[in-house]
Amino acid sequence: MNGLQMTHAVMPNAVLLPLWVTLSWALVVSAAVLRLTCCFKATVWPAAVVGVVMLLPHTDAAGYLALAFQTPSLVLVAWALWCWADVLQLREPVATTPTPVALLGVLLGWALVVDTLNYWPAFFNPQLYALGFESAGLWLALAVTAAVLLWARVPKRWLWSAVAVLATYMLLRLPTGNVWDALLDPFVWLALHVQLWRTWRASRTA
Image (cartoon, helix red, strand yellow):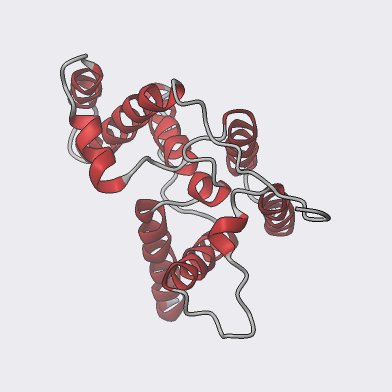
């Protein structure tokens, strides 16, 4: 291959993946239960029990979730951590995502859908998902994320979350080695759609 430079995807450590699947799904599911139960009663016990059960050696709930939904994005795991931190520190949970951040996530998700279905025009095929395995995809994600966060002047929580997500991805390449999977998953994408819809409804009724 004279003159041809090949790039190879950097994948997460194979030993780390089963542990990540179990821990991430246990954290996300327990956080979802936590948010639901706290709507009715301020208690952490149901969520804590769910999380512990999912971590038990012979309970394969996380494995079944992984078969159906793959692994949670780092963004979803960050949300779960914030849910637990808010409750344990007796803070009101943050229910909304800054609109520019939500819009960016929705646009990225639709671009990945078009890329997956190969609906790009014949003269333009960026191979967006494949780009997520390369360093160029990481640099693009870093640049766009930094620009949006600085322009939108988001709260410190969102800034530190973005730093933690991108730093974790760079160090461990979780969850799949692709930067887009670290930033987005179907649950986050749908939640961002709901957030934008609520924002639009609020602006219409204001």
